[in-house]
Image 1 (cartoon, rainbow, N blue to C red):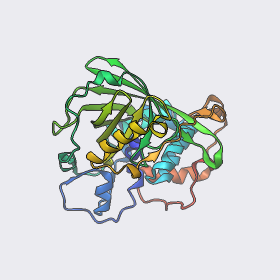
Image 2: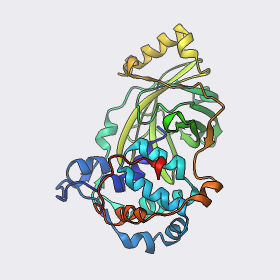
Image 3: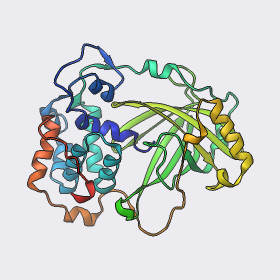
Image 4: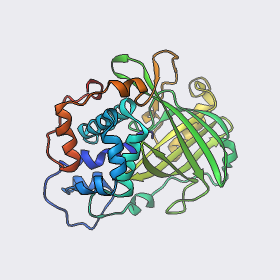
Length: 333
């Protein structure tokens, strides 16, 4: 799930190369569906400077932040590419710029109303007797259903009581290329006692990642004292997404405890999830080769802008200016 907000951050650029024909529909599930129907994104260049002037100035006068902007533009909506951009160039300046331009002031839009009601109409059956207090403490995420969001290595979630719900402190890693180690990431979610758009969810979960908000519905579909199986549905500006994951108290419980595995697999099947389609999350968590995600002070002083960055930046303000680079690699910028 840690890549969900990336789609919204990149959709403004990654989906602007759609055909120039408009669409007749008045609603869309999000950027992704809009582009698939032939829609063209609308960019308001003046918005970046008139309505988000402070954020643009702070970012564009910082070589590392500006590199992050051009990096995202080159990714054209590809999740893994975007994750590496944030891991290398991420900073509060970049977060603030994305938050203002894409979410608050909507400098880039589809021009149609987003409608995800049909997506939420179908939902897995939640456990009616689950007590959220059972989530308190540390859990390992050991299996994931959506490869885009659920399968990052070394995922530790720690739940604690908060007003009207719980707080979830998340740790996960993003692999560096060529077996070069990992970027360590941290994220906070808030879990509240709301049943969601259709009244079917166990909880509503929200947070902010890379400057963009996400909000989703959790459905607890299986649990006992040793595991919790969660299915989820959510949406960003890019569109709706869904998946599932399995928590256990210890990282190897699913592999070593046949009883737990049988109960978790049975709960997954009952919820319409095929156990064999879950990924096995790598929770080896080596202590070497790990650096904090985002631009370090050393990185900030080293980054230099190049002539090519001017053209890459233009893609944000005039979609379709440059062609997608088939061999683009954020680590070689």
